[in-house]
Length: 154
Image (tube, rainbow, N blue to C red):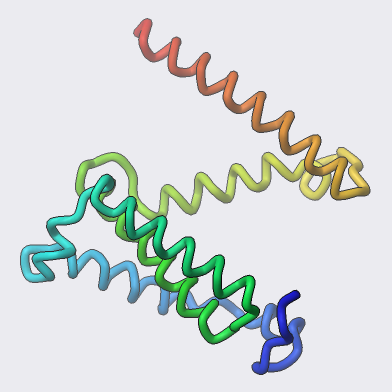
């Protein structure tokens, strides 16, 4: 069980507006670190070389969550966010996608997977939502296969 956060009521903290400037600064910093003027270690990283750090940061977050150590959780979430931003920056440099496209894709996916919130479907229990989620994911995989086949034919 997670201990209560020392920073105040959950409602007040969760309703605080996200400061887009902090995220923009962090995205810019990751870009700088990977640039010729940046850090040799950061520039050298690839998707594959970062896998061990992604695993390590995920494990550290899990430990902090299990302990309910909020000051560590915030720090470990930041470390995990750095991994996401590094992978997105590398993909951007390869001309594949950027962090904005990752966010937009995730937004669309969450809306699509919550028809009980954004559509007319009525789901009342967590079990119904999970069953619906699994069905939506299955349909998405089938659609991706069809799209891939269509692209290969062109």
